[in-house]
Structure formats: structure tokens, C-alpha cells
Image (cartoon, rainbow, N blue to C red; front, side, top):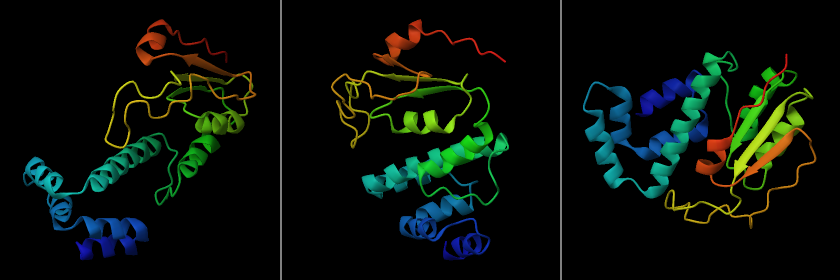
Length: 187
């Protein structure tokens, strides 16, 4: 495992925190990474049986980042040796490629509006449309151990964002999306 992580570190593919993370996960993850032809499901189940909850949360977040980076690469938005220490870093890569274009931005789960504010400022085209979907009453049920029912509640009130391109659709996804129609985009 150390040899693999040293090789990736030398090639600039793993940052020191990621290298430390891989080292801390241990041999089971190393076996999975080095030889994907073995029974991956059995190894993952064994790892899941001994790994702390924080480790599985971190693995989920890492998998999400991998999926996002793959999408960015497939859409020619990702430099090969990109690193995203914060979500704003990845937002900036996408914003640089779309800033002046007419964009339909859909956000599912707005909470306090941090991401919506970012995109409202980043997207410069006045014909861009930003739609946020949220109940503003929190999660309707426990999603994960660290995301219990009611988490992200804002008392039913959407955030105030002074941009006429931003519209919030208040309610549960099953209700609001059933009646939602994509707005026409003008060229």
C-alpha cells in the first residue's frame, strides 16, 4: 500500500492528506485497489464490518468526488492534475467554463443558500435561470446517521438572495417536481 501511495504521490496524483487517508484505511482497501479481480464485494463487506462510521462517510464523500471529477473530465472542464480542497475549488472550474453562457441551474436542497449565492454571483449571463427546490423544513426522514430527520430545517423560510434570476420552489421534491416545467431557454 505504501509503495502504491508513494508512486501516486510522486506523480502528483495524491495530495498528502489523501495519502494519509489511504494509509489509515489499511490493507483491506489496498487489496481492493491493487487487485480488482478478487471478490470485491466480499472485501468491501469485510472492510465495512470493521471500519468506523466516520470511515464509511469519508469513503462516500470520496466516491462522490471521483464521480464529479470524472464528469468534469468528460466535459473537458478538468485539468489532469486538478485538486479540489474545498467545494468552491470545483465550483470555480465549472464557473470558468460557463460564466458567460446562458445556464439553467437547478439546486435540490438549498438549506441556507450558500451554493445558490455562489452561482448567482458567478453566472454573469442575465438570461441564466437559477431554481432552488427545498421544503426549508429539513429532511423528511433520517437519511444517514449524521443526517437525522429535521436536519437542515430553516423554519420554512427560503434564504433571501437579491437576484431576480433566482426562484425557489418551496415544498417536498415529490410535490414540487411533479408540477415543474423546464423554462424555455433563449439563444
